[in-house]
Amino acid sequence: MKFLKIGACLVLLGTLGNSMDIKYYVGAGLGHSYWRIKGTVTKISTAEEVSTKFDDDAGLFELQGGAIINKKHKLYLTYDKVNTDNKDIDLNIFSLNYDYMFSITNLKKFKTFIGGSYSLIKYKETLKNDSTISWDKKEAKLNTNAISLKLGCSYSFNNHHSIIFDYLFSIYTNGDETVGATVDSEKYKIKVEVDRMSKFVFSYNYSF
Image: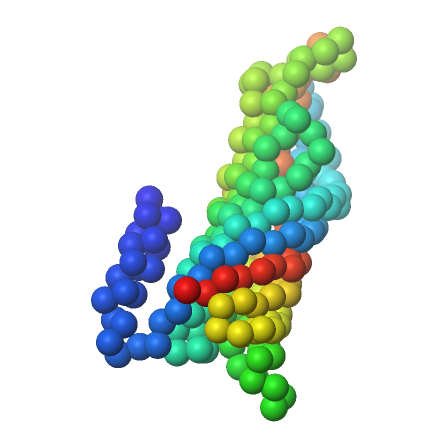
């Protein structure tokens, strides 16, 4: 429901066109994401607990759409499909972003920006039993809320075509998933959460 409200805000921008310089745009890009995952395994019979962290990375494809207001403020939505190279795992990122754009050189076509982002990270993995482990669920679903900072630069070829490079890194994440597993007749509880996420994206934008 949050994203429906955000989308409505973008539509309402059209009613302010008489007092603002608003340009709408769509875009697409390729990038790479980096993840730090935190896991905790608890042995039920003894309450013994072991925690660990591990890093992973994966490429991604991004779609974008939004508005640029008065040539300085950029409000937009992004969708990232992360390539996990595993048919049993589905990982998607839905984000609301804001960038403040400014020039640091005399080149008007080149701009830098800083901004922030709120993301909903949706992870789903199919769990399969085998001869060594039995799961208490068929699927693990981990939904993570993330707040991130971002920075980057853009170059405009003309009023319609531009390219953008941006880097995003999370400063806050919230969300976890717990599943049960049985190994050699011993029962375990496994809790996982996203501890940190970052990504860089090189994209093309078309402005209307």
